[in-house]
Length: 374
Image (cartoon, rainbow, N blue to C red; front, top):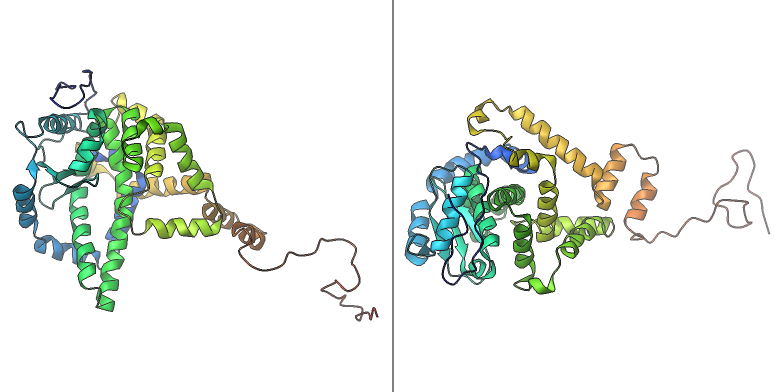
């Protein structure tokens, strides 16, 4: 399937060949944290019951009719350039059935893949107007990656439960139960975005375009004012900067979000693009879909555990360093915690060790009575 089609009103992209991945399994690009978070989510108390109940209750037909009646369906006649990208993305990732795609009027740049029985891809006009051809190609590949991984099912439930939580907020216990599952779903979905970013790179096969797209989502259509290296340096500063208070604030900031922070996504994608795993995929060595049934859940857990272990050990975040110290049995843990909080406590520093000064000693010799220095 050819690329680089010229379309009226859109920048022409020179035609070039892109590698196709016949029979590719979603395991190829799924982030280890995505797989482990989904397994953990399924073990969440009450999740299976809620999932089975909602699968039959969610108004999916209503959702499809809503987009059909109030958005523009991508086709050869409408948003033809997006239709070419969609078909190309499905061809590259070997997704047999091309999911319907809609453009929705919304100035906020966004895209999503939802649906229980069959996935639907929705992109906003804000996103279409913001990105160029190659950047948009990565986004379409991102959403097709969601479809291939089966993420649309859980994304749909997340949207429904988030809305439901608002409606039943006046019921304390009911709201707490729903929010526990919503929090678990959000944690998984943030990780699934890292997987879909990788799928977008496999489709676009242009890391620079993927980086540009993420930068535009963060800072708007002002590429002449932005720099990729400086943008990635922000991610480095975000991870390593601050003390334990900042680590806690990072967790609190990300909890209500469905997506990871943009600089973090860019850094994660660049790291993967430079890895040996990515090069092996581009060379044609990747897991096949027909091998998925033979995949051990235990192996997935082990891969995820290894990933987290490596992440914690290599992380520059103060909290992760403290976790590493705990695991290593740090003897000066109290001092490390005090230093981690950067003087957050009001305790006065201890006097320097050395010859005692009369009137300053806090201790006495067990074998000798206290001296009166008057």
